[in-house]
Length: 131
Image 1 (cartoon, helix red, strand yellow):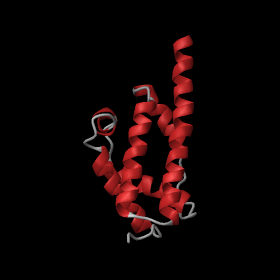
Image 2 (cartoon, rainbow, N blue to C red):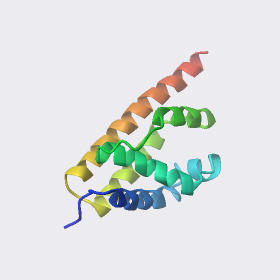
Image 3 (cartoon, rainbow, N blue to C red):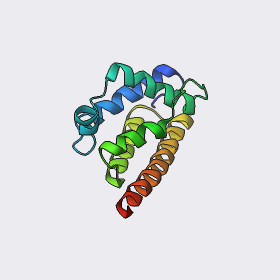
Image 4 (tube, one colour):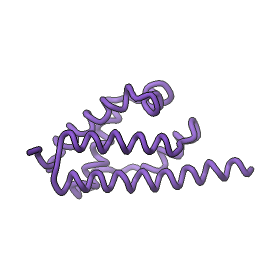
């Protein structure tokens, strides 16, 4: 039996595990490592804040996640393959480490987030082609 996600430390473990899958991934890893040159020491706590806010109902995330992705989308148009890969790696990471209500919530929220971001960014990208 796997543990439940119940603390910030659990979320940190999940996020670190997830990014170990993301970094070498050929379809999205380059976005983090080569395109935006993520400062991992800064990025990881911000992402942990994000997930702590939506999974543990502790409002520590104060940024606008869409705004950051709008800026990223200017560098590389994000498409369905990017979101599918992100979601697949995130879901796999959750399943490898955790189970229970909050693990299920993490996967549900990730699917919703990916869907909304994909919809908004692909709509923006499609509108650019009409200009």
